[in-house]
Image 1 (cartoon, one colour):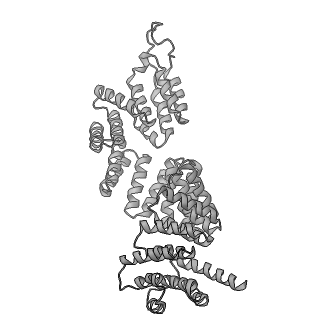
Image 2: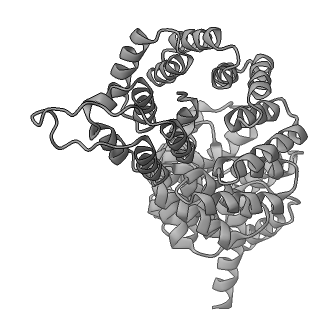
Image 3: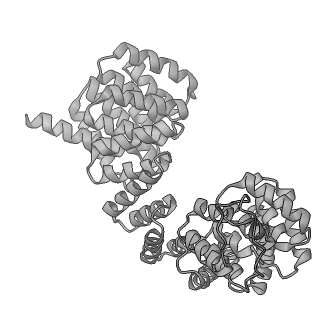
Length: 473
């Protein structure tokens, strides 16, 4: 009996189903003597074929508890069969019932200390426990007992992959494939090694072979989609990951990948829908909310975007870009109190970002909290280089004078993004305290920035629109 295919159940339950039928459908044992009625009276007697068919059907449907109950229904003379006990071990491992599996594995190892399949099962259990040394030891013992054991070779290859020793991982995975050319786990491992080594063409070819062997394995399609996306075949990537989603719609990563590829293709609505499905599967991963927030923002769904950024922040407040984006959206709605709160939190996590300090100050001024704004900025400028243009710009909102000197310093800045980012705050100063016409002039100047990469550009658009609306009324 071999349990190595059963071990693959962690990847595909159908492998167990096939093995279950093949392992128990051989010649039936000799008929056992009748048992006394007091001994396990409710247990049914199965032929090997009948047991295999029942077990195969349950495993194919993923009904692990029912499959294990089937073992428990066997009469004593069948339940003690070494082959069936080893098969039960593999099912226990695949079902995640590791305490029971560990107990049974120890019993089987004591009885059959050189059985390579029992040793491989022990390696799997050691890996689950996080005992790397024991796992390696069991894999090496399994190979010593059976030098052609492809699963043990694959296990060693994957261990070296996890240690980022890609050359040695590749060596063992190629050995595994030489022993078992159809070993899908080894093909997937080899593909991942090739990916890490930057050989996308070889990686794609290996995944194609794996897909031929196991076309129902959603992970293989998702892996090839990633290779295609990095090879600038985004349409092919969407096709492959869509296949992965079709095969297994319960995997968060498949939907997240689909959303990312759709973003790259400009399919915003499809991308938003994909991230929505990902969030439904696992609402505790913040990055999906961030992606969907950006998509909702682009699609004009401001309130939905605000809600998504708030969700992302609640899960991972260290991600200050979410606070930044939330602050921008709230500023655009005129909710300066909430915008101030968002930028203040962003500043906590990124205290060197002067834009956050300035935005918080502007929010206070726009709420009529001039004294509070001065106190905050007066304290903040003590953290800055007193010779920098940023220092003088921030000081402008404390002293509310010296704007000409600040403007002169800003226009000398050679980096256009940095120059126009600072110009936005100077324009706000003029809008708040001096001349809206001058402010408007500088807002327009900001909008002439080629390839802008700062959020103040967006707020400049809003400022012009607001000023023009006021002029019209």
